[in-house]
Image (tube, rainbow, N blue to C red; front, side, top):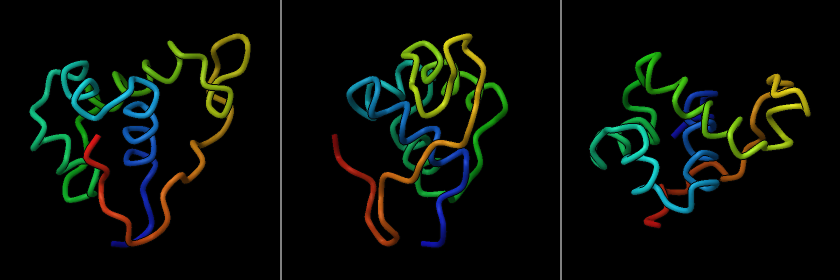
Length: 89
């Protein structure tokens, strides 16, 4: 797999913050298979799904993503090296 896209990184970080990919899928109201497709970059999320994942980052006040006023300040850092699979949390 190539480099992680912004959408993939946001989804991955949202899953980390929520505690599991299953909880993220529930939050986004999509199936686990659809989430896996998004996390692996085979498809891009809809705007609604992507913004719902960004909302998770903002809700948790992720310092790598939002400032104290809730504004997005920089891209989510890579937390997974190239070639790793999607974790089965």
